[in-house]
Figure 1 (tube, rainbow, N blue to C red):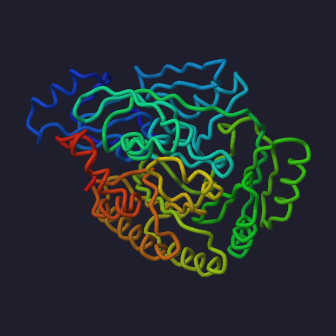
Figure 2 (figure 1 turned 60 degrees about the vertical axis):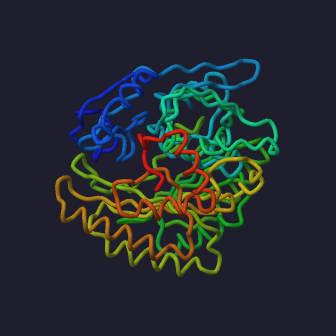
Figure 3 (figure 1 turned 90 degrees about the vertical axis):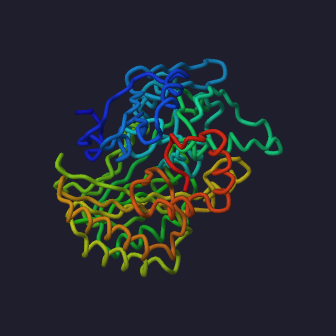
Length: 418
C-alpha cells in the first residue's frame, strides 16, 4: 500500500511504482500500446489522482528531495518530491518564507496548479514565485525554461507550465523567489451562521495583508491570518480582527511561519481512514450584497449533505489584479473568494459515492452564479465534470493549451486537456 495522504489514492490497486524519471522512461512508454501506459505522478500524495486503479505511479517523493538556497539572490531551488511544510521549515533557517497553503503536506502540485496561500493577497500565488522550471515534456524531451524578462517577451510554453504543467509533462525541479520571514498573526473562532456573514462582510474591505478562511460543516470554524510588518502594522491588524464576531473558542496568536498555522478543520468531524473524498475548487468575485443569499444556499446544501464529512470551505484572495501582467495559466486574477466543495463517502460504498458526487455537482451548480471560475488544485479526468472544469479554469486560453499539448504530449500520456 502506498503511503499517500489521500485515502482514495492510498487504497488504489496500482499496476506498479517507478521512482525515477528520465528520457529512457518515456522511450519505454512510447514503445508500448497506448492502452497499457496509464500513469499518474505523485509528489505530495494529497489528491485523489496521485494514484488510481490500474495505473502506474511515478513516485517522486523518495529521490527528488533536494533543496538548495542561494545566499546572494535569496532564490531557492527544490526538486519535485519536496513537501511545502519542509520547504517552509528549510527557508525559516535562512529567515525567508514562501507562500505555502493551508497544509504543509502538499507537494509540487500545489505550486504547479497555482498555489493559493493565506498570504497570497499580498505575496501573490505560488506560481508567481517561479523563476525557472525543469522537467520532461510528455514526448520525453527534457526542458529547462526561465521566466521571460518582460511581459512583451511572450512565451506560451512558460505560460502553459505555470498553472497547467500537470497536463503537459513531469516537472522535476523549480527555482523560486523567496520573501522575508515575518511573524503571522492568527485569529481562530467558532461562528454562527450570522457571524460568518458578518466576518465575510468585514473581510471584503480588509487590506491585502489580512485574509479570512472558513469551513462550514457540522459547525462553522474560521481562521484569519495577517503577516506582521512592524509594531504599528500589528496594532492595525489586531484592531481589525478584534471587530470580528465569534460564538466561542476565540484565540488570537502569533506563529513564526506558514507551516505553524492552525489547522482549518472541523474539530468534531469524525474523519477517519475509511473515508474517500473528492474536491472541487471554485473562484469568484466579492459577494457584497449577495453575501447572505450565498450563505443561505450553502446552509441548504450542507443540510442535504450525504455524509457528515462533506463540507464547504473558502479562502480569501484579492490583490492579485496587480499581477495581471504575469503570463500564467491562472486567469482568475480578479477572484476574491475560492470556495471549495469537499465530498466524502465511506470507502467501497459505491452508492454513497454516487450520491456524494451528485451532491458536489449540485453545490457547484448552485454556487456557479457567484463563483464562475475553477481552480484546478485537484483534477478529475475520471469524472464527468472534467471538461467543464477545464473550460471554467482556462477559458479562452484552453484552445492554445490544447495546441501546445498536441506538440509536447502527442500520445496523451499526461492527464487529458479535453
